[in-house]
Length: 191
Ligand code: ADP
Image 1 (cartoon, rainbow, N blue to C red):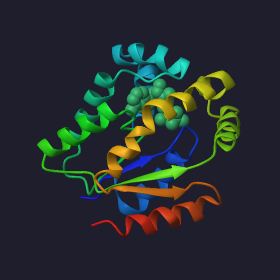
Image 2: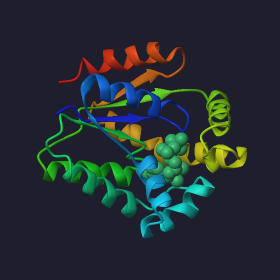
Image 3: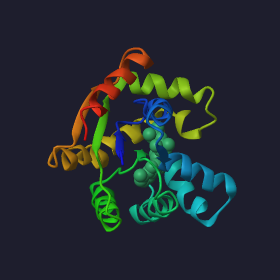
Image 4: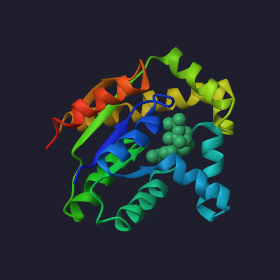
C-alpha cells in the first residue's frame, strides 16, 4: 500500500493536491475537515460536537477524529492506499494513527509537507472564503487562530515523522501542476 500523510498549514493546498494525487495513484482520500463538515451538514451528534470548535478555528478533540479515521480505514482495507489530509493534526493523533495502522499490519509510507509562508496562507484562505461557503474562511481572526493552532499543536507532528525518516518538505508555492510534480517526485522515492 501507498499510505501518505499530506501535511501543511490551513491554505497550503492539501485539498487541491489530494484531488490530483488520488487520481494518479488511485488512493482513498480521508480529509478529517471534509468528514467533519459532512457530519455537521447531516446534523449528527458528532457534527454537533465538532461545530463549536471548528467555528472558532480550534481543534476538535483527538478522541473524536481518531475514532472517525479508524472507522474509515476499516471500511477501505482493500484500497491501494490512503491519503490522510488534515490528519494527524496533533502528536497524540499521530501516535494513535501509527498504533491503529500497526494493528492492521499497515503503515505510513511518507509524510509530504507543503510549505507556504504566513501572508500567502491568509491571502489564499480569504480568497477561498469568497466562494467556499466556509465560515472559518471568512473571518480573518479565525484564520489567524487556525494558523496559530497549527504552529503550536500541529507543526510538532512533522518532527514525529522526521524521527522515522518519513518527512519530505515540499515548496507549496508556484503553479498547481508544478507543486504536484514536486510531490510526485518525492512519492516516487518512497518504497
Ligand atoms: P484547513 O486545513 O484549511 O484548516 P480543514 O478542513 O482541514 O481545513 O479543517 C477545518 C477545521 O476542522 C479545523 O480548523 C478543525 O477545527 C477541524 N479539524 C479538521 N481536522 C482535524 C483534526 N485532525 N483534528 C482536530 N480538528 C480537526
